[in-house]
Image (cartoon, rainbow over all chains, first blue to last red; front, side, top):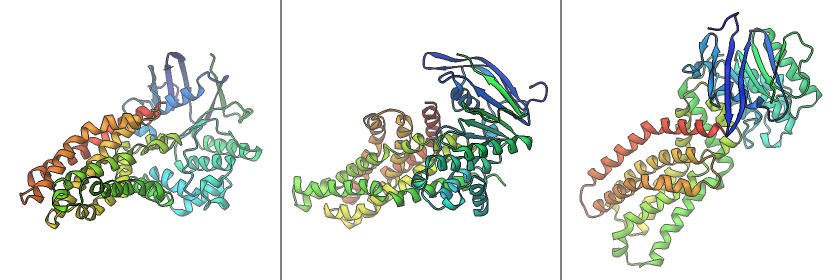
Length: 210
Length: 228
């Protein structure tokens, strides 16, 4: 059981990539209304840690708890509560922005055309909705991937370098999205090099050391 | 917002692949062209005598169908793994095996079904009598369906391997041998006027076995591929 009301808890996570011992006894908790920012130099294992949390990578040892239950064995229920934005945008270049959302976010939630439009509007690319993803700029693609977070209706956001390729307005948008999500009682964990909500009260830091 | 039911999720994956194929139709038609070209070469290389071609027609049609199905399978999951789509499928909270099965079903409809529909024409060009049409079509329906699932497992296992096509053939072809033996045998029996029920039932049995265990194997393999 997680103590002190933490919704997410990781205990003594150890993970290897090939023959490199990357994560050594990483432990942390995340409470509702908290944004955990993971920092550290390149190659220290930020992405690895995020992927271990999602369950995309197995941890050698250690346990993770979500709402007090061990994630091992309840992965599907955990995944319903989780939205992951990796450094890949998970977009199909031949599909339009709308279709990309319909076919991928639609796997989680039943979406109407209005839901999709609202999400596109929220991330500021509504006017690009019917363009194939290949013709969007790198920043617009990132915004489209962010629209999936808006549609996911998940309690826990896991973001890997969310502001990559984004302009100043885009970075402000990410900060706003995270702030809204967390203020509404959600949780967010992000790996980031850049400034991201650095002065906000909701921020907690986790520094990974090599 | 409400959770998407699994059937609806599988339908979305299926429709997405049809939409994508519609925009990249050249990749989809390649196996069909290969199939037609290979089978039309046989009379040129052997003999134009229909009575002699008839003896080998069942085997030729089956071998060509098998190889052309395999041709299309290698890249089945590659694009989705590389652009991170499968990552999101794994995390969608939906049973991954069914999503992958829906993808394989779309793939079969785009590559397997055209082969099946084309086979009576191709067979006739090789002297296949009209009476054997039904057997040929039914045996190929079960055969290409099974092969799509087997190939799906192979493709899921080799998706992270550079130049995985050789490995894929080595993995899948031995498993496909029973299909070839029973399928070609069924067609030959139908040509000879015997009842092909035996081999056809075996083919159907293999098909349902692949259909029930395939999703488990594919999802396990994809989860490993996503780890990289």
